[in-house]
Length: 560
Image (cartoon, rainbow, N blue to C red; front, side):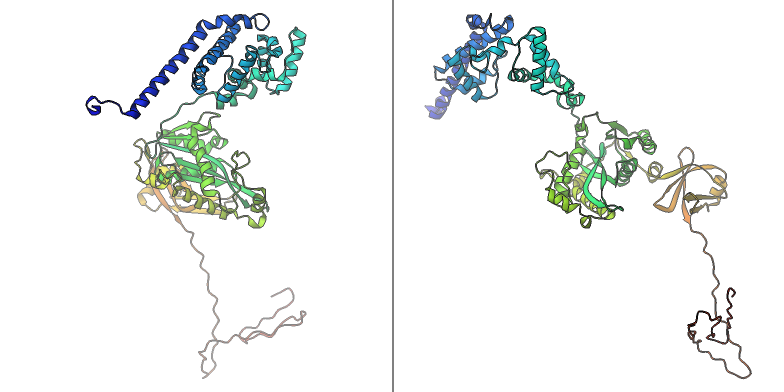
């Protein structure tokens, strides 16, 4: 019979009955609350009019809340759980008493049972002094004082409010009354942009648009700088720090370029972008950065102009919204906690860190900056290189691959621009914009007095005839003088030239003059034995006995 007519078993029947019972209870609660807010509140208007409030809308709001509490007392008489009632109460609009806590809600109902309508008017149970005196003018003045950029405390606001109230014929209020008014989130959101400035509004009030994550390598690079939290020993014996500037490929989260220096300047930015371009052999579709001072240098501006001409979009993130470039910001945090932490000399995440374990103890900090414990600058740069390599080969999230692996297996964005060696030279090498070729060679010098000169000969006969007397662009590297590149004024590649070493001077070797034999004397073919000359113990000696009769040296004072 059960299978034929698909009848429910005992458990299913019990669950069905419970569900029907719950639906009846919910319908009863909704009907009671609807009646209280539509018609039932009219019987309680007289309790809140006259001596308490004078505005009709406020009186009706208190009367509705009173009527809802009366219905709740009736519902509890039907043994309906309070948590079910509270769930529907939180959905009611325009209630005077609002709370997210079931415990607070329960205590408020208890007070309502004891004190009636006065429990709704003021928390002090019948002492309705402040609420009777609080007017809309008081609220407007409290909001005005709370907006002040002086950021006055509640006690100061209360004192200024009462001074204003006495002068204008209003009643004084307490500090708790001021706090109750300012507890309203609407008033806080309205006043805090004036009180705390635009920064608070941008961080806490304004929204931002999410962007799609990169689906392949080269779609988006993000770059930024932060202090490498290890100290090194400077030349003056004091501890110093390096700024790490990093370029990240967003799809794989791999650090593809980095550089370090004493400050975040244009040199580290150029070096990091150059390392990324040389490692990947392309420019991304988009680069995201902040508006730091290191990007305002003419050399870096020239680089961005060149990249923009090749189709790369340079975007500056929204001011005061670091989450716009949150990937590189998150890198510095993850890099410190997963790679740097635990290494000797690590100084923590910095004084701005709010994490409980963000900074080591004071004893560890003092030990790390002792002179005998500090690394040299080269040792610290080596540590940084090893740490970046460790980050790229380490998987922070078990569900994701390590950045190096993710970068290797991913596809390259079709909108990225493939770079040749000549384009890399034009962007990142040092250059002489207008060099006049003379005598079929290029001469580069360094130092204010041309202490160093580097010569590059044009050996090809055809190129000599073509370039001699013309103006070219010369690209070179200060760290590698073995080769330079020549371009015409339209930045078209001409040729590579190799460094020509200077011709060495030839020195004549001084040889011993052979002795001439007399008569039939045989010449001694054995090598001459050089006997040491006798030391002159008397400094007034004008000469000394020669070690050989072949050379006679007569020394006089002041002449040789």
